[in-house]
Length: 433
Image (cartoon, rainbow, N blue to C red; front, side, top):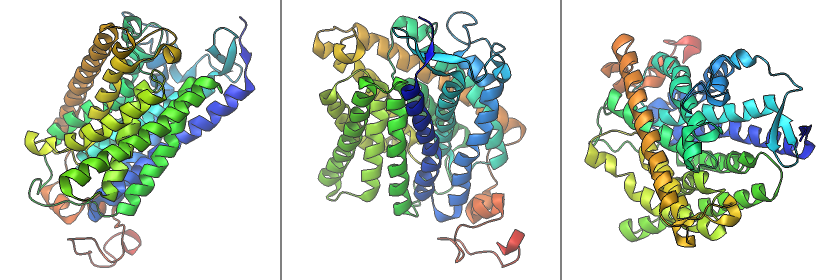
């Protein structure tokens, strides 16, 4: 049918795009509260700088690599088809309902997908908190968006993508966002090595109210992230919206239950982490499971991730802010549970093992997990090593001990100094910082 602009779908996607963009500042606050006071500004900046850097890369080649016509084998889009958004103008439409021809502006779809790319690379920063050069991070961000994120998005979210053809399901980014960022976070944690004092110093979050505020902003944005992926204002968007709420709630309950039984007391940090774990896990499955399924997904994610965050101490990798334990593990949980809990009412045909669908879908989900994790880890490790060998990725020992906020940005977050560090003499930095 001839595409026609759908005003309701356009209005909803405009709102959803703004909500997803807000997730990156929300992540900055979430991560900023989790680090020690001497590194909070740097942590905030690593998220905020991702917005302009990924935007430039996305408009230049990223969108074309991810969503351009397949360049062969279902692995990558044609980098020149939409380079610089050539051929796309305000009148170009993107069909969101093939049956009716309902469409939204292509430029809006470009922007919606851009906000996903921004958030995904920002997530990686949590694994290398307190020790990464800001200049190296600025180089890493746009390159990673082009050579890691864009290919995976093409595999999963385009009709010609090889995982799409295989039948792997990922409604809103369990593979593309969560597992890709989590595997990349592990790679970068290994490239940079552990922080000074890892396994010795407590390294507690310096501002728990920040953590809860950031989690709240992420949760709000997640409704745009998941329900916006319906690309329409319809019943599916409503179902996904509810699934997102349910999973976040049960993730929090699951994490707090583990803390209560294991440690004897629930924590505010656990509440924020549990909600995020539930939201991570429902991201791939929100369009495949019913409300009962969302309850199971959220609860299992909260429980599993609460144990997974401790693996870094046994494995010896310093994933500073638990990107691996929450985003990678949560993404794996949510992606694999589609193979058990997929419901025909939601998927339009595919059923999971518990609904009589057999093991076939579980196998397809497992292939997706392994392929995305291996690709993201391998390419990110190589990129990180290349940057480290050329311009260096880690700050000096002196700057790390003294606090990277002043060393890298000539600022401190708090006028009275920071925990464990003495403020430098007034007037040593710009504007007396």
